[in-house]
Length: 351
Image (cartoon, rainbow, N blue to C red; front, side, top):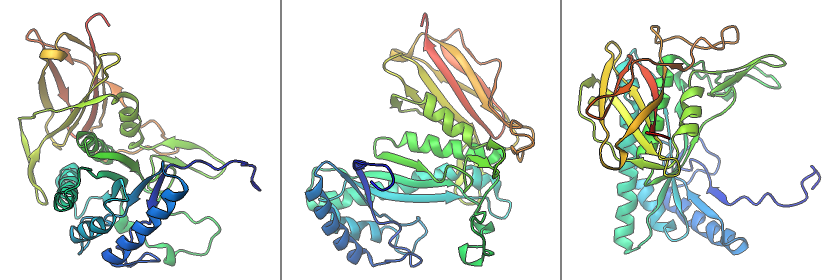
């Protein structure tokens, strides 16, 4: 009220703590200790407002020594009180291993499957009919190895913190992570890019000066704008890329969404190959037969390290691709440049 807000904000989604498995956190606890406290806090909160939804803390990341065990023990305590379990993941390129970095989505996909399996194990043991959904409430590309930490900063009223500058390669990785989240939308109900402005962010600003969109802004904005409706299951066959961390992965990472209101289809696609363009053909049969290409937007550059800056804010932006078409056999045909993010929009004939 003091600040001009007379009524409660009506927040309906609450996280019961954050990264409580991390010894760096104030209030760090064991899984059982945290689970019991979270369950009791959840019960008290629902007494105030039965309509709220609650998120229990999962592991801070999949490399934590208690990963898997933490999820199981927390859900054993909280299963009846919570609606979601949280996941966090940040990705960066290590030691010049760009192939593995471009395949970050493969790690995220396995991470999601592991957490789903653990949650469903607890459900089976308890004989519950409820399926816990996932809240991937922290994810992004973050060059954490460059971060000196808050305690090592010079004293300043507003110090600059982890203002990473993102490249074409980073945009392709962010696009792949978005594709992975959409592909798992049956269980991932919430996903939050961290953060939004300046701090590991799609938007950069200067005090009293300009603001500009980083490369990673564009996949996020385009997925939010175009990838609505139902997520369709896609089956991909084609070239593979060998990676030191994840073995061989598909060069093509893709997902397709269907807008049931307009009938439109959106194909989101990343070419993970660093050297070769990728020719794709997608069969359009059954309910998705008889479509035309609306547009093919591509974010790519011959320099995979190209970035946007205050001086060159539009160095890397999505551009119209040429040659994308529907073949005589009714298949979508397109060429994806190396290390590229692509949005191909289709509409029913006559629409």
